[in-house]
Image 1 (tube, one colour):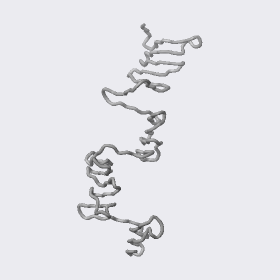
Image 2: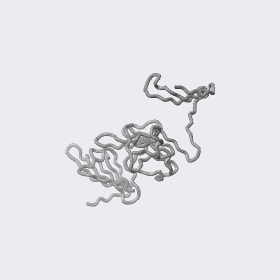
Image 3: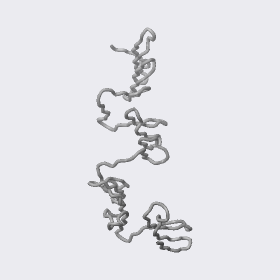
Image 4: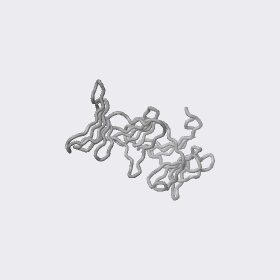
Length: 231
């Protein structure tokens, strides 16, 4: 079956019934060299002169077994144009969304300015090293349940599996004083900076309420320029 039409014309195949003689249609336009498929008297799918597939309405429903979408050359691009977000759905429920600002939300609708927002917990599987990137990264330490923070190809801080926070080192301090360990290859220290009328404090406690919250303390009063030791 061949359908010849003028250069500025169109070739059509109609599908009809007693109620509508062109309820379905396949049409080829020689004006822009596009092929259009219509169902229920409306354009549903267009293949343009560049081979682009344009779906006017409806969904792509891949049924029966696993399916793969891939490209054998170049890159695969998925997205939207205009003021529309891109959503990823499993089990009939939206799981991830990329909005028009480039914000990514997992199990939530992103808002504000944070680029990645997660509605729930995050799990780090596998492992990494500080040299994986020159940019700041967070990774799980190989062979242990520790979370490491690195910048400039160097690990800067580690939260180990015992809940100990290690800054500048991977070795905890002496037993009984190992919850926070800070190390420097030169001089080191911890700074408590407050307002000019504020206090910098270090409290020693064996309770979660009452006076026992500060059984002992070291406090510096900026107003009086005074250092106080309390027991």
